Amino acid sequence: MIKLKQKKTNIKEKIKDFLNSNFWSKQTRYRIIVWSIYILFIIVILKLINLQIFQHLNKDKYVQKVVYKETEEIQQRGFILDRNNNVLAGSIKVYNIDLDAKMIEDLDLVEKLLSKYGINLSVDNLKSIKARKSHISIKKNIPENTILKLKDDISKEKKQAEKEISEIKKEKKKYKKDKNKLKELNEKLEKAKKDKFVCIKISSNYKRFYPENTLAAHVIGKINSAGAGIEGIESSCNEQLNGENIKRKQYKINKYGNVYSDSLSEEEVEESKNVVLTIDRILQFIVEDELKKGLDKTKAKKGVAIIQNPHNGEILAMASFPDFNPNNPVLKQEYLRNGAIYNSEEPGSTFKIVILGAVLEEQLFNLSSKINCENGYFKYAGKPITDHDKQGIITVRQILEKSSNVGTAKMAIKLGEEQFYTYIKKFGFDSATGIDLPSEQSGYLAPIKQWSKRSLPTISFGQEMLATPLQTINAYSSVANGGILLKPKIIKSIGNKKYEERQVVRRVISEDTAYKIRLALKSVVENGTGKSAKVNGYTVGGKTGTAQKYDKQKKGYSTKHYMASFCGMIPAMNPEIVILVVYDEPDGNYYASSVASPVFSKIAKRAVEYLQIEPDIKVKVKKINRE
View (cartoon, rainbow, N blue to C red):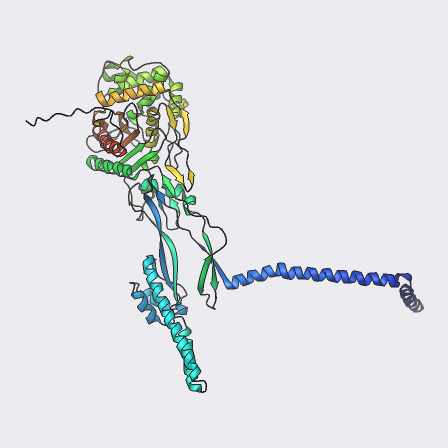
């Protein structure tokens, strides 16, 4: 106890000594007061900064949330246009009407207004209204002119209500002392203030339309219910066509959150971008018209036709049948597939330009070189190679004219596997062309290691390998333009961005070799299997192809099912356009000379007239004796 008391005494003495020490001198106390003021000042400043900046931002966000309603509005999807700016796909603004059952003041009045514009409430609608549901879908895809008239009627009703409110207020001034009358007028005023049509909710969206219906449907594609592109340009350019959504700030001024005005946010809005195609609407119509007529005549299962500019790779027309109408629902995905880039089949004799180009380029043969075609029967690796048109010793030019498989096979054997494989790849087969369309197939060519002893001659006349129609026409275009393989072009521009005039892939053959192939193709039309492809006033160069289809079940080539095709250029020696026509499984006469070549001729005749391509043959006109 004595020790504790002693300790307490010591502590008191120490505090007393400290307070009496020099530390608490007048100067020290002054410094403490000054520093305290500084610290308090800093605290006040920090508090103000917190209130003015950080808490202000939070409060501003809260106010924004309460006062403003920010919505994201889908921007109008860009248009798809042909090369001459004709609309192939566009979007129109349409409106939807919903009702908020919780806010209906006078259902009869609402029904009467809507029925004026042919918008009638269904039994299900009335059940939902009775259940007081907040959002009831009444009608979709209403034209803008109907909505404008409806809004005008609602506006007139509001003006009438404002007029009534003004008159009631004037009347109230007369009956200041009449409590009963004032009560009656106040009830009228409250009723007049209520918005009778606030329950009608109008929203907008865009509806895609295709004014040309089925025209170029496989190139254009279509959009799904969510507004995203499926197949065609709608798919490959989906992002560019959609653009950025528009953000709107809507001012909410009553307890129901009704919007009375809205404006675009300050954020810059990027406009949707229109896509301009290389397709020409008129040429597309010509191609589809003639292809369809041929399809009806031959009863073929499928048909494809393409027109290409060989000098820049532009696709001027691309048609595929069966087609579809993008304005209507498509039941099966396969209907959307573009046969021109998706269908991979054995090309048959149209492929013979590859072996001809290779042997001419390697100087193994020239057009006058003679080859024994063995009277249409040549046994190789234990199995025969045959010709429909039996020939003996003929020139290389005549081998192409008569479409001799035996002669073609002998050229391939002379060339050899390695070089032939190289030239097939150089001409663009076994790889996708890179066209700006989805779902393009690359065809198929087995590696040399997998070739059988018969593969070399068999592939030379278009069997044991697969190619798309686009690959075939693109290879012919390389012959037409002097030996350069180009990337096929389907888009001219997107928005302000113009695509390159042409994209060179590689040089395939020399100009001289390309010229010689064109001479041989010209002979095919003048003297050989392609006579039905002639066009009055013009030279035509091209090649027929009648390919047996491979039967997977029988594991051999069918004797009933064929692919008939013709690929040609006009004028023959200075081509302006290249055209390909393909029919899959024509019924009856299946030869390309009877099925595909005549359709080529009709398309070419109408195309050169439309494009105003100068004739390169003087047409002899018979003089009529009028005496």
